[in-house]
Length: 442
Image 1 (cartoon, rainbow, N blue to C red):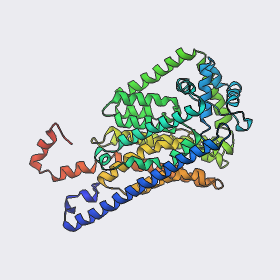
Image 2 (tube, rainbow, N blue to C red):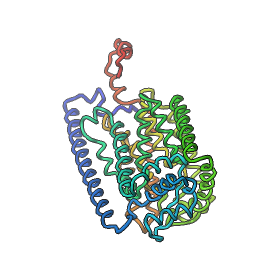
Image 3 (cartoon, rainbow, N blue to C red):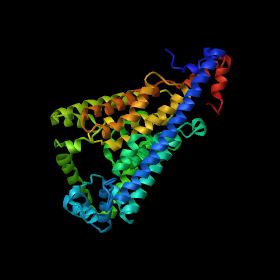
Image 4 (cartoon, helix red, strand yellow):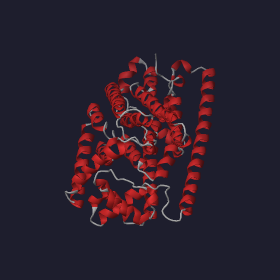
């Protein structure tokens, strides 16, 4: 079966079919503009409400309150007590000194020591200015990465990236004050630069090590794809970040970090705590939230992770030669939610990378079966974390939607782009060799 979109087939150039294609194009145009307008309204409305929530709070607001953990760890680092960021009592005391409310509970810090460098930079400011700068700067990186992923022709035709300001995971991440924007900016930047600037792509993927569970699949994917320069730069970036953190905070920072990882597994990941498990966006979390044993949860997650890695590897080996690094970056980002048991709802922002890439391909070459459903499902289902507090089973739809998105991204990556096929179809046999030999190419 041919994969050329109907609008690009040579036999579709009759007046009637051209008229039908024009109607579909106009409808798609109006739907895109409507979606962009609604997304912008939703995003700006959230921003206004966020300001109101912050202003209405007598002290430190619980809205975006996870940033309290980042800011206080930075404060401890500036005071020369970086290792205390990984110890519950001194870290919790620093948080209490900031917000003064024991009812908050402890906000743990499980990030590698080089993330302390970033936290310390923000702690140079007061808490609220630092929070505003954190969200604004990382959101700007998110927007820049998504905009760059849109094909240039489509980028000039309209701000498609605006659609992803209304992505519900965006509001979720901002509501937590978390780092989903940063993770997405790094994965998106890697996808944009993988072909043109592999060294910069490697820096992005190396910096993603600040959240190791999101980068588990990256080394394998780069090796299979033959992205050796990117792989080497990513590894060097991690080594440099570790060395800088050691110089800044001393060698005792690493034993404290490793001890904290054991605490994270024992006290946070493995206990049956519905108040915490409700935020998980993984198969492991779903099994544990619904009463499954620890062995069953780890086993189910292992099956899913191995299957996802196998599918990604196979797709990377079978990818069409005409596919760009953007396709590989999108596939890697789509695989991320299945590679670790520890991924929370605000981490779903990373799915904006495969969604933007897939939407750009579909608008250029036509939608394939299931792609529109996959895009709409992956876009909307994060809402289920907020609108179904009673029926947590519905949150399984988030995992199913992410799986469908992963599947259609891999399928698209392994097929020849339709505009390449269409061009080849209309070039006479005698001209094909000379056309393919031109330096400008496609």
